[in-house]
Image (cartoon, rainbow, N blue to C red; front, top):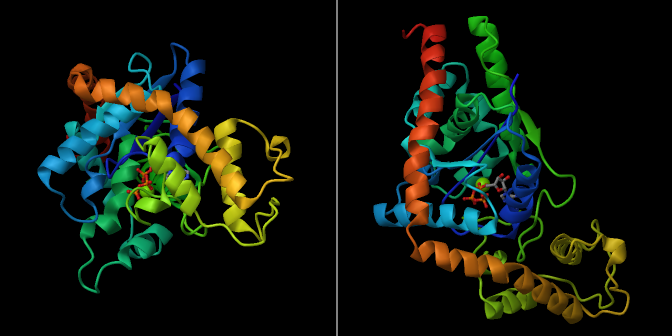
Length: 332
Ligand code: ATP
Ligand code: MG
């Protein structure tokens, strides 16, 4: 069977360091190893972006374009990666409907992300999309018969559900058309935490502006956010992820950004302020070229051409698979 990597990212905002270390950087590493026989498909999942409720059309459009630019600015290579917009491929939504017939509402309602995100709504006000989101996510991957899914650690429960759906599809229809996709998650930095609350993950859509460092943040913003990041007042820096979770998060970030192990970071004589300043300095240095690439891409029309071309490529792949799925299910 052919190896196909698939991943998606929501255009709910500008990618942050969690997205970068959780998925973008691993993706670029995989891309370097890519051979002719391997497929790499990356989707900007704009339909997922309205699962918490509708957005202004203009905002959704510009966020989607900006996400595409950000990914390329980070090193996603459109020659090697099929980068496309989810809503350009309506077959995915049809597949998610089919998957819905193989899933129960109670199982969806038990998912931790659903519980967490639905808490922000008043009882009775929870959008349907928030519950059925994992079905659409499963359809994203299964539509392309992907075998491997590089994602951050926060997606583990959704990946389990997806595996269950592929299995149920195979059993129900006695077919091996849809492979059970494997989650690919780095052992380190698969979950970057919020700068304001290290018990939560860094996120695009919650936690507030100061909780995340976005790839477009200016040097000043980076220094300010690092300065204000949660730490503790134990003074002398030690690495203790269990008891000093906030400081450990900053050290983990510094380790990721400087490509050094924790042991290689000379923090013995640092104060908390030293740690924050080293971190800000390394982040700014890392993001500087990305910011520059991004500005260029946003002002040009290269991205629009890429998305237009890829709409057709992605749709052709999906239509081919959908034809078979429709036969299997009895629609054709
Ligand atoms: P949202 O808050 O809108 O859900 P998000 O920051 O969680 O945004 P997603 O678009 O949902 O981002 O996820 C894109 C990818 O980034 C996924 O593979 C996800 O696992 C990964 N990811 C998200 N947050 C983190 C994090 N804090 N650490 C590591 N990986 C992350
Ligand atoms: Mg998310």
